[in-house]
Amino acid sequence: MKIRHAAALALAGWYLMIPPLAHTGKTPGDMGFDTSAPISKWTFSAVDHFDTEEECNAELKNRQSSTEASARRAGPPREYIGYAELMKYQWNAARCVSDADPGIDPNRATQIFR
Image 1 (spheres, rainbow, N blue to C red):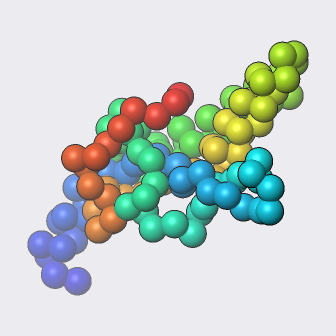
Image 2 (cartoon, one colour):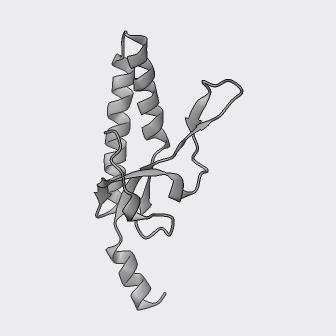
Image 3 (tube, rainbow, N blue to C red):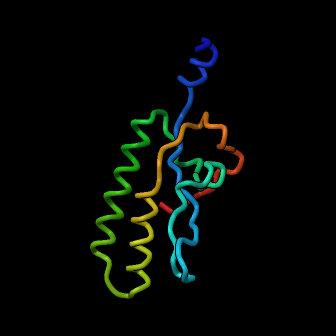
């Protein structure tokens, strides 16, 4: 590895990213997250940028735990139950991606639901 390349990787940060929603079945309501989509199609937020992969993974685990708890507590109306489940699946499909990944364009960073 060239020294310049190693230095660039050392300075890289990490984004917490969510795959795009996709139709996954035969009925219109069969939706899921397309984890096979290219990173350029994933949603990310400039706010969700971390200095290390460990920090990013810790925040991901925190969001997974909190949305799991919300999904268990969800009660009527039915729309809230569906939203809580969607958030749970969203964070379970998320992953940390280096900002050095060629599929990331920081100019398109958008705010995502927290």
